[in-house]
Image (cartoon, rainbow, N blue to C red):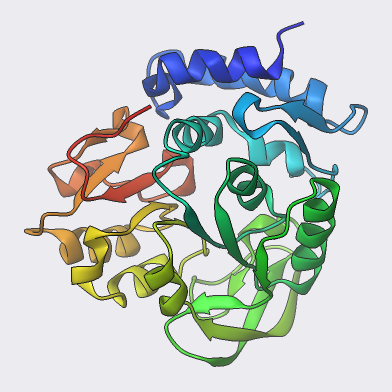
Length: 282
C-alpha cells in the first residue's frame, strides 16, 4: 500500500502535477483519493504521517450527503500542503481565515508556526477545537467570520455541503436545504498585520478582505486564496495589477500569471498564491 508520505513526496517533486485541468489530473486525483481513504476514511485510523509535521489526526466527519473530511485532502489541496512544508521556515506566524475543522491550522502548528484560526460556524469551530486537542496543538481560535468590520451577520449553512456555508451577503441564491443562523463578525486586519502568511477560504468574501487590506502591507504578507467567482477574481486582479505583488495560480502549474484569464474563478481551479516573491519554492 502506498503510504501517505510517499504520496506527498511525489507531489513535492512535481507540484505542477496538482494543476487542475492538466493532462492526467483526474486520474491522479482519483488515485490520491483512494490513498487518502486508507488513512482518513470512515474505516481507517484517521491519521497519517506528514513527515515534517508528524502524525496528523482528523476525525471523520460528514458535511452533507457526499462531502466528508476526506474531501479536505483533495489532490489540489495536497499541492498546497507541499508548499506549506517547503516554506515552513519562511512563515513563523500564520492566520487561517475559514479554518473549517482545523486541518490547515494543525499542519501549520505542527510545522512550527504560531497560528490564529478564524471560523464562523459554531459547530465547525467546535470540531476544529476537538481536532486541535487530538493533535496536541493550541492555535488561537476566533469563532467568528473574518471581515473588515466588527458586528453580527446572517450566515447561511448549506446542509448538503457545509463546506460551502457563507455569509448571507456573499453569494447568490443558495441551493438545497438551508439553515440561517446569526454569527459574530470580526475585523481580521490586525491579524493580517501580525501574520507572515494567510490562508483565505471564506466563501465569497475573499475579495472584500483582500482589497480592504492596505496594498502597501502585501509586501510582507503572503496568502493562499480560494476564489469562488469571476467577480472576486476581477476585483483581486485589478487590485494588484501594476504593483510589485505577484499572483501564482495552481491551475497554471503554480506559475506567475500575467493575464486576467489565468485567474481561478471557482474552487475547482485550485489556489491563488499572492506573494512579493519572484518565484515559488517547493
